Image 1 (cartoon, rainbow, N blue to C red):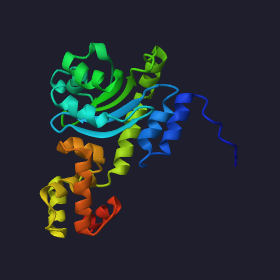
Image 2: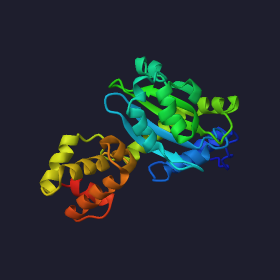
Image 3: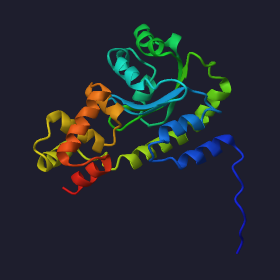
Amino acid sequence: MRSWQAAPASDRRTQVLGELIGHLGSPGFGPAVLDGLQELVPAASWSVYRLGERPALFLSAARGVPDTTRDCWRAYLSGPHRADRSFAQASSATDHAPLLCHLTAEEAPAEHRAKVYEAHGMAERVSVAQTQDDGGVFAINFYRHGHQSAFSDAALDSFGALAPALLALVRKHMALSQPVAEAHAHDLEARLRSLCPALTERERAVCIRLLQGMTQDGIASDLGLALPTVKTYRNRAFARLGIHFRNELFARVLSA
């Protein structure tokens, strides 16, 4: 038998990925990714979303600036997404190969630049996108804001090297934090109706999305509501159900 101590990873990219594994499935995953990659890809915010027939914002975090991702997402869906061709190659790919994309604010169409980039102080985006079975595009995006220096070639190279692992990490995080994401919405709605007929349509809609693993910011974007309104519907629904926390919602509905 042999035994020896494991040598620490010498490559910084490998070290970062190893550190992020410990945050999988936790509420702190978003900030941890942004903080962990600062040395390699110095971005002020990042986001994870899906484009296509059912666009959805899954995850975001900011560092040193307010997280305005939800506002950016709603502004993007208000019209600029129609002229955005930055993910066109990914959406037409049939082999699901990840596509890297680098876009500066100056390169974005006028409406996109004004409503999303200039309105929220963003200057540059680097993304990895991958087509999904339903034809939609899953994208991970890191944003440089106006107070930061432009992404260097080294930063873009690091992002490219990390992109496949980041895709895997983010998908795993979503799977761990979305225990019933695969459940059909109508099945969840039927269970909620059976559990508590007094729930309103909006209260059920918020609960369904909580059960599917969406954040409150994501629910606000998906339903076109303000974040405080989502919180109000959640609190009312929880009161009717006699619960206080999301894990209690999972327990009640999954055991129904």
